[in-house]
Image (tube, rainbow, N blue to C red):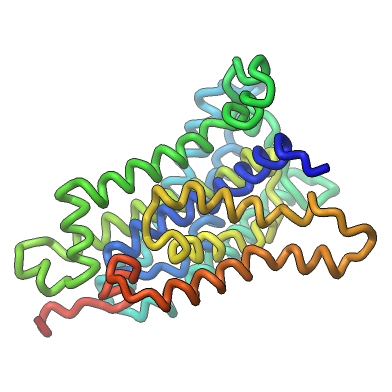
Length: 328
């Protein structure tokens, strides 16, 4: 039988990196920047957190929970911030092509993560190609103390680490700011028509830099969550798979609405692991077909979205286009 109580927590755990990535990319795209480097940013954020955690665990005999959480989190945010600044310098200041820059940053980020991950593996001298940060992972994975006393309710709603709840909170806050504040209005104006926003006195460069860097930092937390929580503190090169690209697809799926991304990411997370719960016997080809479900759904949504002519369902008008003030 299909065990819904065990399926939902695994779907939620699978969805959190997607939610972080899609929320960060949505904020970025609202400013008119199309950052296809999100997969690379998630890699850099993850390996930065791993490096900070590794150095901390090696320097103490017993870890302090608060410090064990703060160090990798700050390292993750710093690494992701540097990736955001690099992207903005290339695309906003130097006006480089955003598509090419994003793809280059993905390649760079994956290589950066694999290089330093491999270097740490050599330092540990482990026989298996991975790094285990169990003590730090236990701090990230700690769930609410009363979760085990609530039965299936505790399992479904309260059995996650703090980064899972933080992802939901960030998505809700981002949605509120974009829809209900002056800052969100100005940001949307920058993404829709930067020339008009510039004429109204809005600092285009500032908005693009700040929102893109914040978006990268949020996406980087998705990489940190994957290693420290979902993977139990184990870093392995090339372990992320295509989650970064799914996060970018989720932005279109949610029609650029971070609050919708909460349920959409859980849906995608469930589709991602559904093949584990559907009986297929020994027929491996059927399992491979089930693994295609997230991508099939993405294609269907892209077709449906492109058929709708409502303006609110379309991407920001200046998305992916550099702004030349002298052409105003």
